Amino acid sequence: MKVLLADDNPINREIAAYFLEELNCEVCLAVDGVQAVDAYAKNVFDLILMDIEMPNQNGIEATAKIREKETDTGKHTPIIALTAYTMDHEVRRFKEAGMDGHISKPLSIEKLREVLAICSSKKTQEKV
Image (tube, rainbow, N blue to C red; front, side):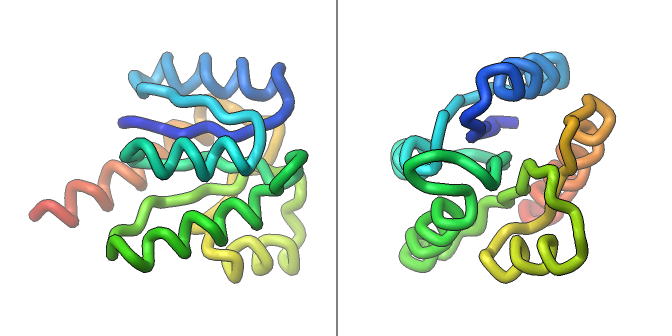
């Protein structure tokens, strides 16, 4: 799978990228929402992992811009929030912003494996 990983924290980015590569993913990195939207415009991704709190443009703003672009194309790329915010009202806010789910930090390879399996399963179902 080709994954866009957007996170401003270099340590979180390095760990997540390592986990994704261990799970045989091709990883594209972005350090803020602006870079994430730009990368999305230039590439096709199977999944976007989006940190919520980033400088310049946060994950919710970046998700809104990506969803706006998808209106023109008719496609839907899964966007999963990477966040420490996991209270019900926060998770609801992510979904209302157009995110498909969330992974709580600290990140683990097991959590990523589950998300990749779900996204891969949905992608396979779409092709059938």
